[in-house]
Image (cartoon, rainbow, N blue to C red):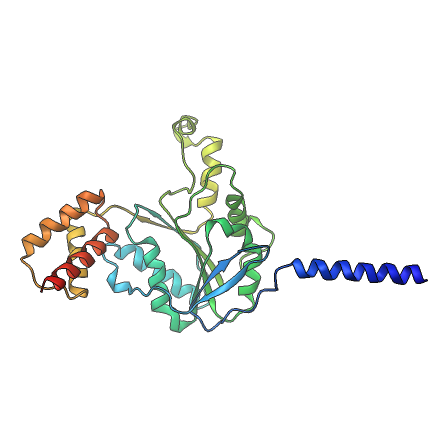
Length: 288
């Protein structure tokens, strides 16, 4: 009996040492915040409140009116408790994909919308994240920015399972949104495209392409973002110059400098227009 008691005491001491090495249990985030980020610095992950997220207005996003209207409509359905789709925003860099999602939060925060950012490396944690959100009365958009995968990445399988492949469905108060420069989230090689066959005048992709398409197809709503024309780029420049209260300068001079700025960066995008407007407005205000 004494030996049994001694064995239990030794087991208790070992457990106490192990518990001391474990990270503390995550604390509840401040659910009053409009946005959150998922962190996993060690063995346990946790939601961290973002009380002051980047604020963007939908009206400031120019040149993407159709994409904006579709995403707003889908979000209204979601907030009304109606069927709505997970969204893939894909296309050229700097054209407003992630900005559009951030602007949704600014527009619909008062209606109960909340944003949760999850980095690609933490997609494996989605089964741990979703139960935390399901218990809340708010409605959440779980957002992954600049998403792309190499073949065989674990996050690819995890996201695919959460979207439609797992036994448990997404909670009713959660939608997934992802942005990517790639339509199918995975690189497509010339060799894989050569596997495509035409049978009875119908195009049948090869197995490798079918596998890559299978993830993007799980997003019910696709929004494509294309490079801006020169005139659309200049229109966005003028919008931001006005919003930043830039000093009045001869319009043709502004046009030449804006085009030069875009040429140096190899892109005519909304991001480049915004960066030029900030530089131009700051330099001329300082000069005055």
